[in-house]
Length: 312
Image 1 (cartoon, rainbow, N blue to C red):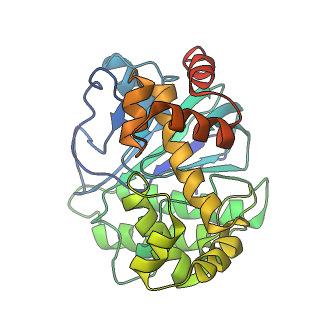
Image 2 (tube, rainbow, N blue to C red; image 1 turned 180 degrees about the horizontal axis):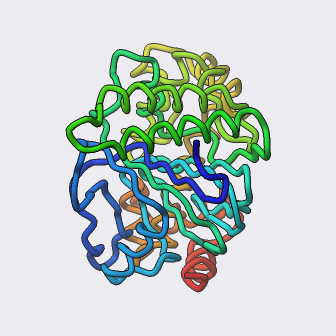
């Protein structure tokens, strides 16, 4: 059983590459890179150890970084604040946070939280289960406030079982048991309502899933809904129905929102000139990007950069 006096952070994705300091103008990227692997592709540590690792590498806990893996945080004691893609969430007992690959995050105010940190590579979950789909989805809710609900109790129990198995003597720990327990955790999370207003991929069905995968590949090259519809073999009307079901917004708003989000990430957390960011996102002229960004975000690129870089 997991001690209720801890913050549990579960990292659900990652490549065992390294987490070297970011080059000039780039967002710091953190990859799954444990110093020692007792079980290949899988690790559990406590949150205090995570922060100590970052300090030893010269990184402040509150610095912005982009993850190449999933992180899932279940808070059981204390309070603080955590920012995911420019939304700051209060954390308190019963808060569940999920950060997906490519998102930017920051421990705005770590506060009094403490806990357990779990990491695993894409190859680790059992690919024969439907949990594999959840690992590969990069969008959806980022925050749930579970309180002292049965869902919270169930997740705490499962995480405790994962930790107990991982802490067994090395010759007896079972990677298969860890894989199956991890799949159960993912499936339990999939049952939770999308309480923070995030996307619900299930509501959009296969059409939405295929569209979002294509959008992630192509948002920097085309913002035309007709291009996506043509490539996927649907009509724009069909894409709009799927997007509205999953997000409450028509397809064009979803496309523009994805482009604007990447613009926010690059403006806030890199030193690249606005003109360079504009070209990266498919705008030959910076003025066109400026108009697009202002229309979708509500302020100019320069004002947004000044506000968010000043808060780091």
